[in-house]
Image (cartoon, rainbow, N blue to C red; front, side, top):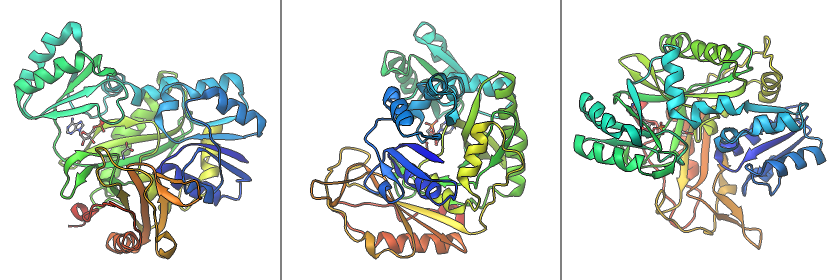
Length: 424
Ligand code: AMP
Ligand code: GLY
């Protein structure tokens, strides 16, 4: 098959790495890719949101299957666009209606409420109902959780301790703090527990497979302190997400999610990401995403033993049949190297050295590029993801940290405590 993968981050590097290993893959293109994805295929200078350019490339190069890495094109409706233009091309991802699970938190909360899926108690408000929103906040206990309804580049969730401050922030959000994304705000109860990420591949006809479970580390600072980032590392498996916990996840969350999509007539042939929180051994949904996680994918792909292309093809065709998704019994750990200053402002164009000395990890590129001389330089906040397998999480982490120690760029930063909280 000829495959076009859309995206440019560490997640797409890991997907490209896995896709390139499949005997079914005849050619892989990554649009736009980054400074490392060309190890696995051909980078093409197309923006995933430029649907017409994606269509033209697909037609000109006889692409058989498009894998959509990030949420923006899905929320904008790339599935529907490609199906209307070239119905014979397989697209791994939900339709625009399905992508609402991530594109609208209000939609996602209503969906969960309808399907009786465990999630935090909530109400949604607009500018017209701001007073009621302030009243509702008064019925909740601190801290207060405010969520912009729409996509806000991962910044649309505020968690505030003081009631009056929360009321002020609610009004500010409704007045355009996140532009149109916060014209509606979900106010919800705060849940206390430890989070994990569960990924499901579904074929839109009731078939689904669960990928290895992972945990990511969102904050910039050790001990989960400081600002939120796109993710500083990940581990898989997650010790607390044992068989009993995963049974509850499947029974209470995955099956009703799949059924809810079917009942609503929503086309969804792709990955569902469940952001879960473990509240006293009971999984509850914090959020849905309609794609794989980043940096979870950089760990999870190392533990998928089956042919991912065969699985994605079957899902996109609407029939997973009896294909197996085998999980490796090994543990995987990813440590992210980021630019100094991230998630605030940071320099770009710093020379990266030492990757060639890494032997025990796979170094997935995220924010990297080639300069005019063809040398590898930084080009983003999250730069490289060192991912390793080990017999235990300890071993996998030790390998990733040893690899990070061999790589240099000016201002490089990484968290030294990835995985520590779950290993106890
Ligand atoms: P989101 O953008 O929905 O992933 O939210 C960002 C982060 O906010 C989540 O990963 C959680 O750590 C936290 N969060 C969101 N909703 C809640 C909640 N109801 N209770 C506690 N933490 C939450
Ligand atoms: N790691 C969280 C995300 O991909 O949204």
